[in-house]
Amino acid sequence: MPQLLDLHYDLLTVLVSYLGTEDLLSVALAARALREISQDQLIRSVYLRRLDAIDSFCEFVLADSPRRPQLLVSLKVEALGWDIGSTTSREILERRLAEVLTSSTNLKSLEFPEISVDNQDSLPALRHALDLSFSRVTELYLSGKCMTSLLGEVLAGESARLRFLSVRLLEADEAADILSFLAPCRDTLESLQICNLPMEAQRLLFPRSPPIQWPRVHSLMLAGSPLTLDARDLQAAFPNVRHSSIPPGMIVEESDSDQQAPDTATWNSLISYTGYMDCLLALGGRCRVLHLLPCERVSEWQDPAFASALESTQPRYLTLAVQDHHLDRLCEQSLWLAAPELAYLSLNFWGYDTIDQLCESLTRLCDALKVTKLAYLSVRLPSPSYHSDDELLQSLMACIRSAVLHGFSSLKYFEVDIHYGPYGTQGLYAIHRAMITPASPDDIALESLDLSSADTLKVSLAE
Image 1 (cartoon, rainbow, N blue to C red):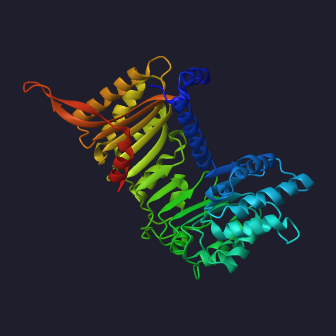
Image 2: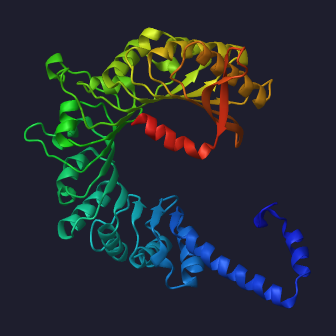
Image 3: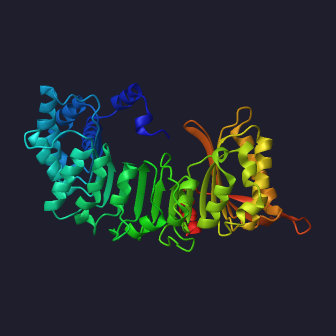
């Protein structure tokens, strides 16, 4: 049965025309109540880009009810086409946007662009509204020195509530003050992202003696100039960090051998790493992680770097982006000897030539993975050009049956996602042996499972 909103407006009109007076009143009251509920839900998370959008949001949404601003939980503001010098723009910022920020007493997350409010005469109402918002939110995304300086002033005079901070630096001299003005948040800050981090400021941010520690930070992302730090620096500053990310573009600067972290140093708290393998290795030490998410495609990998990263991290959870003609790099059993505890592997195929070649490569990979404890294999592929999704699915399932029959006994679950744009075929299967008849050899059965159980299985296997 189609959902109500899937029906054409004209069809709904015809259906309503058959209703009696009492039923029509009930429908009208229900529609009005649903409209109120839906509008309340829509403004819990708001994204405003243009100044006219800010004006319209205040005029047509918030004006309906004085309690609406109190429902706002997350607000993202982007300065698209703003002309701060114009009278109209300043009026909207001072009257409209300042009103939104001041009235949103339950705001928890705020993303705000770099604009000049660095003195009391420059947009005073907006500056006051930002003061209030910075003292309320627990999650904050900022850009530029003006915004970070304002945050520092707020933190100096307020009890800290900030748990997540993402800062995009626009000038090199901004970096030196970040951790100093964040000092009041040392007991609350749990996640820190610093983008455009300049090389010359890294030692100021993370001094080796004495190190400034952030014991509650469990998630760390650094992006920008070449990284001159190593595992000792990051572990000294963030002794309990569990999730680390060094995105593409953060190239690790080569340093002298005597500056490298000793091989015996182990970053015991680290659970997941996202980034380039070379960056992870250049940090030095043994960064053992449960979840390893390389940014490279297989075609970009250097085999020694990937093998060394596997040996250093010994992950249980690994995701890779691959193409089938580069899959040969992963089909060497000696490579996987470095990851004996691997339990979950996700392969995101960017392309493949033919179904037969894909299955041949996958068979060889499964054979190489026998030296691991892999229990869950997930593959994501684009729809084939000259075959149906079902043909590809059946070929993959036959490949998995054959691999298990030939000794890949640790594999218990197989997930597949064949997609074309928004459309696709998905499935999750439990693998077990099934005896067809007493006289026949064992066969491999793939029992269909509810996809909603996939996340629970992945987490349990990776821990």
